[in-house]
Image (cartoon, rainbow, N blue to C red; front, side):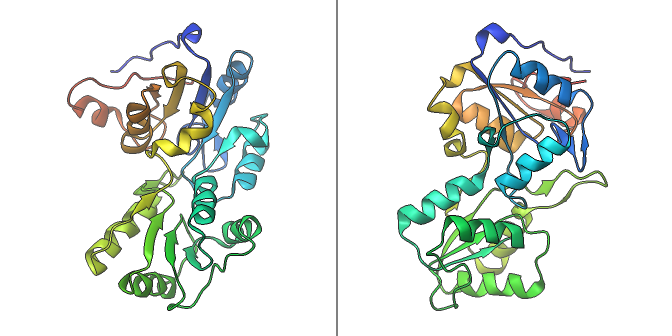
Amino acid sequence: MPKSTPIDWDSLDAVVADLDGTLYLGEAPLPGAVDFVTSCMARKPIFFLSNNTSKTPDITFEKLQRLGFLVRPEQVLSPLHGLVQAIKEHGFSNVWIMANAPVLAWLHTNLPHCNLRPSRSETQCVVIAYDDTFTYADLCEVGWRLQDGAKYWITHPDFVCPNPAGPVPDVGGLVELFSIGFGRRPERVFGKPNAEVLGPILSQFHASRVLFIGDRLYTDFELARRTQCQFRLVFSGETTREQWHALPGEKPLVLDLG
């Protein structure tokens, strides 16, 4: 069995933690998570980075507070921040975004001059977020715009999202659907493992002195590898001990928050 490796706090200037499957699952904190965050906050700055774009940063902050994590809004990072910045930088005014209603409302507030439900002919870019309310009609709207040649972005590539009942479908599965159906793959990804999502942290701290904690190999561990951050893997989310053992080469260090 892989053993938990103690954290060398003297080697760190900051900690970044994933959320779903790392600190909580559904509406329950995972064992030891609240105490770990509280202890960490007494030692080092800690930030929270989730690929889950079914929720706005504000909703994520409120959830952390509700579950007992006494954090501040500025500690919460989301791929949605990078998405808003990119839309502004490209000067897009017509972007069709598949997202939950609260996320669309948050995006509208942050992009007041952007039409988030443009007609098919007006659409400059299609964006897929983690929408757990979409309909078949929404899939058709995306597919038509992809066929028409609109730019194609996604907030993150996760295939599933941890859930108390078992993993549930996420954006990555839809990417494969549209790849098979229309021969299109995303031109831009804003969440992990894209190193840009850690920009606000790496502008303040050297990557080698930042610890990232997560439950997923192809997003969390891969982000740490790309940025050269320190990393600890937890087994409370997607990755199993069997998958850890099957990894070729050097394996990520493990952390038991409990």
